[in-house]
Image (cartoon, rainbow, N blue to C red):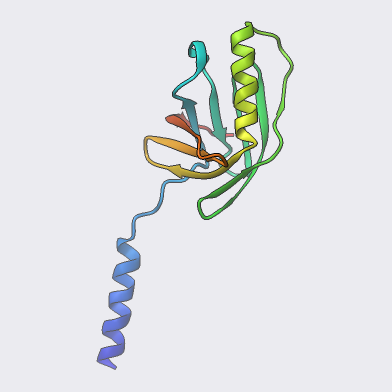
Length: 130
C-alpha cells in the first residue's frame, strides 16, 4: 500500500510541476518582417477557433490545431485599396497563411512554419477579448 501511495504521490508531483505550454488563444501578434514596414497583425479569438487581423484590410477565418499542427481556413477580407506595395505585401501574406503547417508559441511571440519551410515570425502585441 505504501508503494502505491508513493507512486501516486510522485505522479501527482510530476503533473503539478509541468509547465503549461503557451497558447495562441486570446493573443494578438504583429508580423516582424514586412515590406515597407506594413503593419500586419494576427489574433486568435479566446473562445472560438477564429483568427483575424489587419494588413491593409481586415481579414478573418477559422483554424484547427492538432499538437503543433495548425491549419488556417480560407481567408476572408474587406476590399479596401491601399498603396501598391502594401497591397502586394498583404496578398503575399494571405498566400503564406494558406501554406501554414506548424506553429510554435512562446510568451513573447509566435512562429508559423509554412509547407516550404519558410517561417513567419510574430511578436506578441497583447491579449484580445473577442
